[in-house]
Amino acid sequence: MRVLAILTVKNEGAFLLEWLAHHRATGFTDFLIFSNDCDDGTDVMLDRLQAMGWITHVRNDGPHEEGPQWSALKAAEKHPLRRSADWILVLDVDEFVNIHVGDRTLGALFAALQVATAIPLTWRFFGNSGIIDFVDQSVKQSFSKAAPARFGWPWRAQLFKTLFRNDGSYKKLGVHRPKSPVAERIDQQRWYDGSGRIMPASFHTQGIFSDYSKDNYALVQLNHYALGSAEGFVIKADRGRANRDASSFDMGYWVERNFNEVEDTSILRLDCADFVDELHSDAELSQLHAQAVAWRKMRFQILMRQEPWRAFFGRLLMAGPSHTLSPAQARLILRHLT
Image (spheres, rainbow, N blue to C red):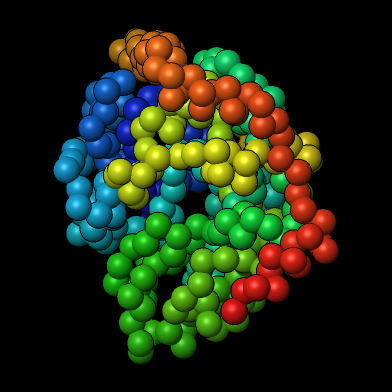
């Protein structure tokens, strides 16, 4: 079985090897990775990984009318790896698939949901754990404090990414779900949520949110390390969003994701150490990783020479951790939804 992960990156060389090792251990067999306008050598790292047989790398430098991620997905739709895949998942480098069933691999998940044609993986926000400095350490080990399993606001916490069977039921790829459903195949769809419940037929054609009133993580969740350290988030804000070339991150993004209320180390139960060691044992790749780490530290120092970025960093330090709203507070907002 071929399971394809599609990824778009820019200046993410410091995190790339851990992400790749984790998802190889999870059971992904193929990686189609697009790079755009990298300054830290991420694109060169991907060239090396391709030469080693780990991934397929496609350069996707701008300009992009709709943003680099949309451009990459359009290219991915025509790529041979898309056509040969049995299952597909579109991911970001700060998203880690975390399976809770069996040996914690995709094989165990598919065995638990044998008739599924799509499995939406609901985000679980992981806060910054009070970490200020960017340090070259494991993301999964450093950031272990997360949002609760169920809460009503912000709505973005219920977004999912869809692991779907590549059986011709959808013509196009999307950031959160496959798009352009084929009408004559829709009746054959069977969507199951992250706790193994059959989902309403409406999700076969639309929808990118899970039901916040339910626990959606019994079988699988998508760990979303959207913030990282305070220093790292400044660099992320400088980079901008993958699907909106001109858009940057802001304090609202930080506040809506910096939940540190529950300790969750479940992802560490999947052993990917052998894959990590294999990647770092390659001298060229290890050097490129070190250069990407050095670039990130240097970039932060450059940004701190500018008052707008110093002020932004100061606000991050003043903001502290966020807290989830009570059900009553959440209802004050949700009642205005139409």
